[in-house]
Amino acid sequence: MLRLTLPCLLIVAAVVSGQSSEDWQPPTEAELPAGFPVPTPPGEIEIKLYPVSRAVVSEQRGFFELGIWKAFRPLFMHIQAEEIAMTSPVLANYPETAEERARGTMQVGFFYPSNMQGQTGSADEVAVADMPAQTVVSLGVRASYSMRNYRKAVAELETWLQDNAALWVAAGPPRRLMYQQPKLLNSGSLYSEVQIPLRSALAPTEE
Image (cartoon, rainbow, N blue to C red):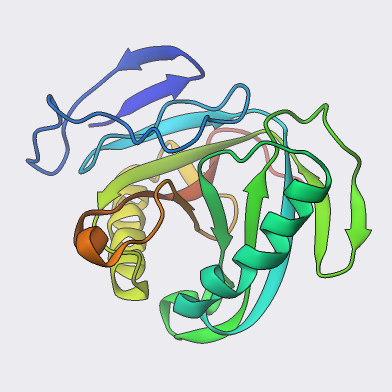
């Protein structure tokens, strides 16, 4: 069971892991980019549609858990210089082997408030690129931003894909969306989403 959301539109909802989300409120540390669907409540799985978006991205090599910190300075300096407002969430793209490794090359990105702002291209340590609209299956997670918790969430989504293989197949590697600044006092209860891009299993494939 799942819930399917388009931006600002809830179609059907159900708790999938026994965690009640009735009293949960999405983090409000920064505004969502234009057209982004609301965050998925912790412990729930839903299918979501994301619009075309623009992001400034920094590529980081080394331990994945340090990548967010290393990327923050060049990304923040870019949005300051371009007078771009900070948004939430922060994007983390890991290589497809991230479930098996703790280090490698990852991408960290800040979304622009709108894909109509700024220009695409590379400069210094960052690159601005447009991301196509996509459908994802998303799991809301309330835990630290460790790679262990990330891999656990990916495994849960892969189980969901196996259970729904007649309707959906993965269309790319997983990603993580982080909505809060990591703080030592609440690092165990930070909110994020882990997502896998989808395509319909019923749609014809290109040969």
